[in-house]
Image (cartoon, rainbow, N blue to C red; front, top):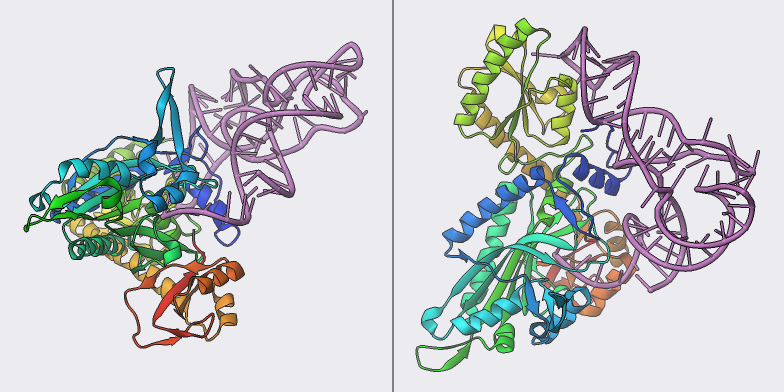
Amino acid sequence: MTDEKLPTREENFAEWYNQLVLKAELADYAPVRGCMVVRPYGWMLWENINAWLDKEFKATGHVNAAFPTLIPMSFFEKEKEHVEGFSPELAVVTHGGGEKLEEPLVVRPTSETIIGYMYSKWIKSWRDLPILIVQWGSVLRWELRTKLFLRTAEFYWHEGHTAHATSEEAKEEMYRILDIYEKFSYEQAAIPVIKGTKSDSERFAGAQVTTSIEAMMWDKRALQSGTSHYFGTNFAKAFNIQFLDRNNTLQYCETTSWAISSRMIGAIIMVHGDDQGLKLPPNIAPIQAVLVPIYKNLDEKSKVMEATDKVFAELKAAGIRIKMDDREEVTPGFKFNDWEMRGVPLRIEIGPKDVEKGQVALARRDMPGRAGKSFVSQTALAQTVSLLLSEIQASLLKAATAFRDANIHDPKDYEELKQIVEDGWAFSWWCGDAACEAKVKEDTKATTRNIPFEQPGGSGKCIVCGKKAEKKVYFARAY
RNA sequence: CGGGGUGUAGCGCAGUUGGCAGCGCACCGCGUUUGGGACGCGGGGGUCGGCGGUUCAAGUCCGCCCACCCCGACCA
């Protein structure tokens, strides 16, 4: 708790973000370089995110399991691109029990290798396929520059790892998961995303195809918010994951992996937040409504508390995640600001006047000042609140979508592209040549985000070199 | 690893020509307050990043080291 105000987003977006994460008590800096502590309020948000995803994964035939945190170093050397991609950021354990280890162990930066090793033991026949396993946990990458939630050394995620008999099935899986990620973004996080394929230079180390969902933050930078990879037989060959098909022929498996990380929380902060603080989507908010009793003396207190207790019990019973803030040491005004900063979608106030009139005062976090305020009857309040929460959920998505669409432009030439990516996304024809992509990156720091599945059709001229281009791509500066 | 910066109470900072280590917020206690960030009074809290040097005397001067932050390269 503190009464210092946040900097505005215009003043200093990075500082606004850092201070908000700390003040809202989502996370704190850990005494370990680049690591964070996710505090209870942040973890509740994470749990709500995971609960939804877990349900979707299970509904599509996936099961959960756990693999070791430590992975033999030699495993990483089995897939060439994978080791090249990850070796610069590995943390390595060299000693155990006071003795130097014969083979160093890597703290997992991702688990394709150890899971691939296990799959080779478990898979013998086409009857064993597909294997659809999700692991929930954390991984460690020795990042050089870190930022709470967006890029920490240790971060939390789920990683799905699947093995299939055919490339068609594996690709279907990759797309199925990306669709779940998209659905999550729209329906739960209220963040519009663009689904597409990563360019060769942006592909995951060891993947044949990497797909992603990309979201636009308030400062118009892009955030890759989820990825789903198709490996072909790359990892199957490296780890000897083979099965006998129906014709008694030995085949390599086709594998996938996919993930959404705690970075998603950073996206929620940067897409919805305003100068007052967080705005959490009701569907995943740890607290959907906060109840603030207001009174001046003991007589008023007993009447007010009687009403708030009743309202609290009713909303709780209706399944609304409600919090009663009956702290006596701070004023109502302080509480209003405090809970707004922490992004609670709806505030319910009950004071002596409301008790008299059998009403409550409501304040919507998604609407500024008076526009979001109303008085409603205490009768059937749970229904009113539920309805409002879904309205707020919808309005957050609507606002985020309008903002994104207003900041995507179609440059007429390369010069205009350079201007656009200063403060927005460019949607342009691209010939597919890595050299053109590299030139944009060098000139503007913007990278290709993805080649969206949704294409205008036809062909055009590459925005960089002018050669014929079959696809349009998003260029943006990324986190 | 390159460029820039900062280390003094939990946080933000001040500390002059070297001379009793301070301020604001937070925290604890008591009282008054409470419909948009309340106030009064009284308290507790320090290896001045570390080590070494100069000096009667070092937060302050000198040397070395360490940590962290910002900007690049890397990245979910």
